[in-house]
Length: 148
Image (cartoon, rainbow, N blue to C red; front, side, top):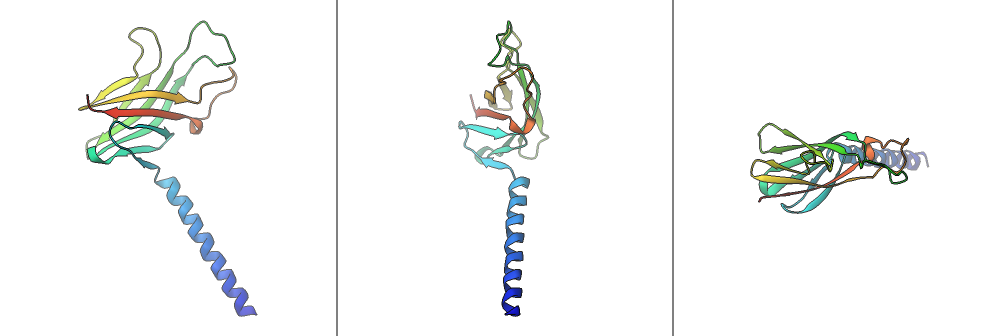
């Protein structure tokens, strides 16, 4: 009987180690494979890999989110400034800063990177209340990469 209990405890410990290792692997390798021209969504810190192009796009930061909350009436729509990092092959990574400000010469939702165009499709969630900030981990950026 003791031998059966020891065996069951050993199996349980191995199962826990496997599950723990799987959870750690999921957090340390947040990459998503996409095709050129696909629309894709990334959470903070996640990377999209366009394998046929040897290109990586990583969602790095939300520098500003002053967009008018949906539960408020504003005289200005506000803006969001988002940074993603693009890297092709072994080249140095390049930060791309998008801006949703609708004013002339301020809106920057399409950025050229080498022979590619990276387009910001959306930044979610949209602010709801003026005094409630959104945690960086809750943001999702939707992008599209294509060749013109």
